[in-house]
Image (cartoon, rainbow, N blue to C red; front, side):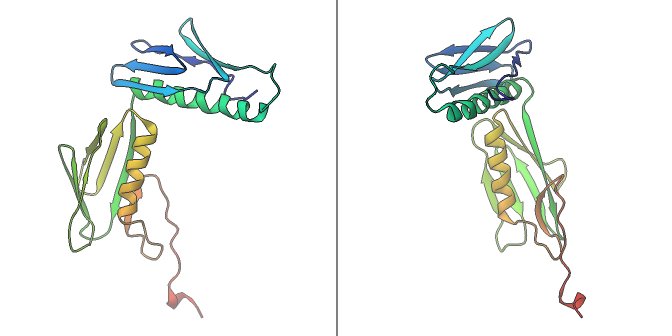
Length: 183
């Protein structure tokens, strides 16, 4: 069995989890998410916990079932955390003249190109700019928040010689030595 899959998920107050036709739906104060679960994984909702188990009687594809066991447990846990607390990624703009501005669901980034880069937030995602060089992407879906943050970072990835570009707030960019460093 999967070590992660064996752990039960505690359902916090204000969050409801339902199962219907192999679809787990999680509803909380921040929104609602749903995830299809493979039929080889049994989902048990009882006593304020969600538990996952696999049928080991049928030995075919046991490795696949074990990997699904941990995968679906993690996906449902991410949904429970997302609808109760939410997720947030912080990006930093490093470079002279680099700035960002959030207006409603639009993010306007001036990053050294001849034109500003304008990104529109999809549903359930919000942009915030506490200052001109910081971007916060927040939402209830962990995968979507990560993908949008990666898309913003891809506009201008940090380059290794001066460190300019868009990076995650906790990212460390190792700088290379230039040509003058060689002897």
